[in-house]
Image 1: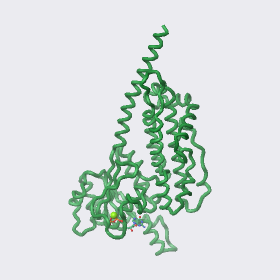
Image 2: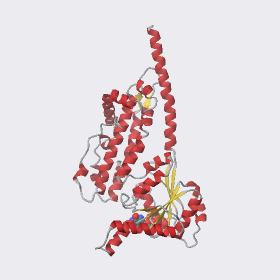
Image 3: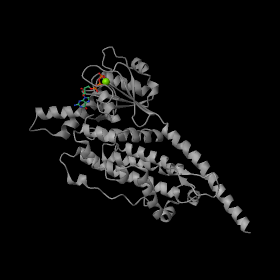
Image 4: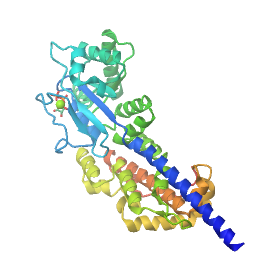
Length: 407
Ligand SMILES: Nc1nc2c(ncn2[C@@H]2O[C@H](COP(=O)(O)OP(=O)(O)OP(=O)(O)O)[C@@H](O)[C@H]2O)c(=O)[nH]1
Ligand SMILES: [Mg+2]
């Protein structure tokens, strides 16, 4: 009788292990597909329009960085040049040569640039859009690709306008005038409802950059949307929240893969700590909390790096060490049973995972809590980076969010 019960228990846990293994391999393929999803963005426009500067801003690179696109007042980009995203190797921004020669022919230009390769085109102009831009957009559209117009250097326009009309200057009005003028010009060239975004590469957090990001994301399919949201710098509170939401969808997959199924049936699942550390490190970088990103942001906003770093208050943001990770995992044990009940209907094969011990719940808790606190850190860093005066509020550190089970 006893032996039979033991056999049954062993068989049960063998089946559970098999199921977890099988699901793991499927989840691994899902994540692989996501991680290898490519995003190829073409940035084109006239020479000197600010294409390379925009690319560097998107990649979070300072002009002085050895991996940055060269920029300057003389013509600098003679052939299509790919710039790989520093964190996401499957994302490339292509710096295309200027389109401004008098003999410009859109179709030939696109053929030379290898049109097929790109997911969409960003057409940059620092002044009015012209016939060349409209022609290029039409040719891109005719070949079934999307295009977006970026009107760059708006900080410069505002500055000039303020100098011209110091007493009547109204920022919103000037911006509106620029936008209307761009749209009217493109319509005159035969484009019905062009999408125009006003951007300053030196101040991505202002003007239309967030709207550009939202529009691009909306118009991409699922996997590419995720990659875009991860690859663009989070320069506004909205961007931070969207990045968090996009990463959150995949937490359960990461947590599941971190559960190591023992080769011997009946032993509980345990956790692959290095894998969890890698995931946490990628979250942290994704929110720009690593030293490189903080340094780049600090120099872009001319503030000391330590001032921005002081806004990183979460335990893992400050110290992503194995000890800190273990401490949070053991905290998770306290929540284990309650969390297990609440997660039950949210995660496929949850019973099988929980049956293996609370490892899965602990991994899920760790990643969830970390994501929340990194996002809070990122918000505080942004507030401090872009605040005009030093606000007291920016230096407040909130306690870690205990509510991972409630959403
Ligand atoms: N104020 C301001 N200046 C900008 C901005 N974007 C670019 N610039 C400046 O404009 C100049 C030209 O910028 P680039 O990025 O080199 O222009 P490009 O389109 O890559 O030029 P080519 O490679 O020659 O085709 C540089 O001096 C930049 O610093 C911006 O948003 N605001
Ligand atoms: Mg250039």
